[in-house]
Length: 108
Image (cartoon, rainbow, N blue to C red; front, side, top):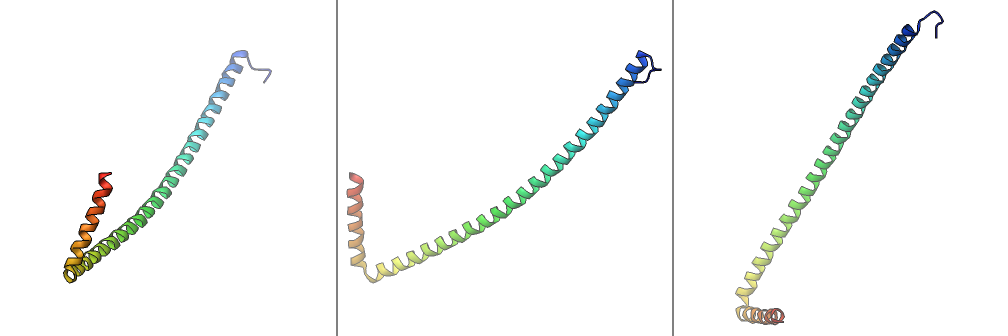
């Protein structure tokens, strides 16, 4: 401390020094908060892009599986109709047998 300053001047000088330090701290804290916010926004955008890519991938897989299932069901249906037209008596006996077994299973 300077020997020529009065206690009031020294206190005022200390207050100004503390205010300047507080302003510097506030500026640094604001800058750091902005930096963290930008980093978080960048990471959120990366995650959003990755999630959209995965969603498209899963959607494509689901559409493919659904298409395959529909195709197999239509094929099975047409093959069943052909078999029933070619072997009507056998088809009726098979249906009765399956119905009987299912009836026994559900009754117990």
